[in-house]
Length: 315
Image 1 (tube, rainbow, N blue to C red):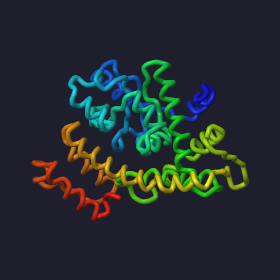
Image 2: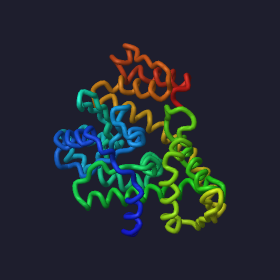
Image 3: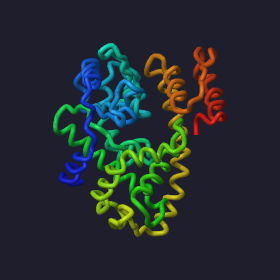
Image 4: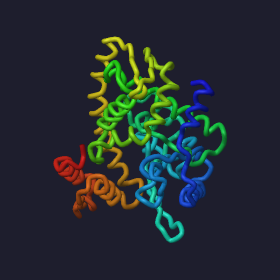
């Protein structure tokens, strides 16, 4: 990835909200976790709305090494084994509560997850417009920019072989994001991928322009009266391999989603209540946590997950 490309992608990234709440969050996390943090990334609904008091702020903390971030080895090992670990924090800002969850990811895992990972967990997420809320220095910021650019390129390389050979760039992103979403247990209502594609339409269009020549197959772009269109030349064997890979990603992703939810029970207090809150917020359905699940989660949570899946809360 050339420096000029990452700089142009940097110019397309959304600016973090000029918010006292965000400044308080980043300062609190730096004080709590020390100098091992190299960057903090903001994404999700609060970035899109610009209101950090409405909903749950989504942050990624990029750290040098897990063993430097954690005082003990157990959480460092869990983060290395199944990244990321997710934590919850809340603080007061001028009489209002700011709630945030932050995922911890090493610089190495960020790099691998946006380029090499089979599953779309990171390269699917970081195709979305993401703000660099804080970075330790120019080197840390540059690495993040390179990873964000790599995520988009990986996304296009992995999704385009499953899509029509030509069409609008807007439809490309709508369909590609749906593929990525389908590879995880999702609680959002149908149409979420279309909303994301619409919100970031300019970002997706311009980053596609920047990276089209760097893909592992030929892709041409043409501006028409109806918008930007693409055409690809992808061999039949590659298309077949891609069509076989995505069902495997979906199976892997749903399993990993369950394992990450289970791990969340132990990474912060109130993990079960956080899971219930998240499911209720996105599904609009009441989620009750039975007492037996609270007392013996590893034994009884499987029945709860199955019941939620049958109710359509998980997909």
